[in-house]
Amino acid sequence: MKFARLGAKGQEKPAVMVSESEAVFVDHLISDWNRSELEAGAIAKVGAADLSSLPKVKVSDYRIGSPVARPTNIICVGLNYAKQLRKACCRIRDDATARAGDLYQSARYCDWSKR
Image (cartoon, rainbow, N blue to C red; front, side, top):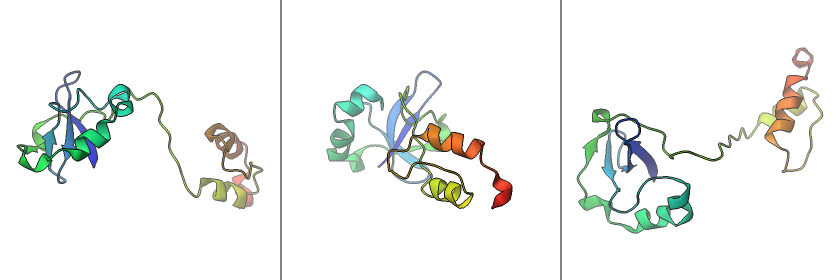
């Protein structure tokens, strides 16, 4: 399921993408794709609904907003980032709990010319 928020800035409505160019609004099921709705089970609620009977809208007719309103954390994972740092002879933690800041600091002070 691909989340979407479509509409004018500050007036976005929650939607689900049904194709690359079409979506259906789900604001009758949830108020928005935001932290409180997600914690309250928005994904399960929308996933259990029959979206096939809802009218489809062209995404190109709307402004596309952030898929989640006011995200509290943004986490990006580069699966081979730590591996690349090790190849460049940087010392980083081997455990799976290495923080993004640890990796950033390792990359920042790494001598990439020794690769």
